[in-house]
Image (cartoon, rainbow, N blue to C red; front, side, top):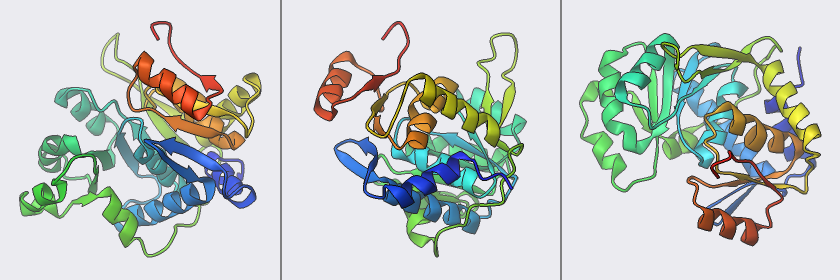
Length: 273
């Protein structure tokens, strides 16, 4: 049994520092204890939607709590997360859903039109979970065709209807935790299969390299569906018990204000930033 996984580290943080802030988003703080509860309940909810160990689940999400909760919930039940850039075209997303043999999709609610197409084009997909960011999304789902509506759930409803918290699956270090797709500059994108040991060791080494600890407050404005942000501003901070400051979009003014208000200690960016 391989106990050194990212999922276990979050659980340990929740036990040792339950009130410590795990992430900050749009004025709201969520503690490690609350994050552990969110992950456990959403993992149980995914199982109730038919997602099983070994299934591939696409995450068409940006820098919001939905991404963190979904990623760790998918890994918790022994499934594999497939982060996808939600701004990709319909054809680009469809290629990845097919190539990755996806069985579940967690997406922003603005992608409802794509979900309606995918529900028919990919009958093997068991469930679509939409994250509420726009008004009247529930009414729009209710108005869909019955075959689509039956497969489509709202993120908060999946959380609320969970009948408990899912136990952490018997995860082996060589099990595939995440499949990240390349940008496809020399042909079609290719899925890089990352194991639980890959993710854990990368996060550990980044934490050591940056001398990160529980007092750090890390700005996450790089897109978290890319490996840079996934490792440096999501997994490493959670492993070290630090706080993630989620910023859905980058603008110098917004990030400056966030850094000042929240007393940020680490900013990860690219040269253009």
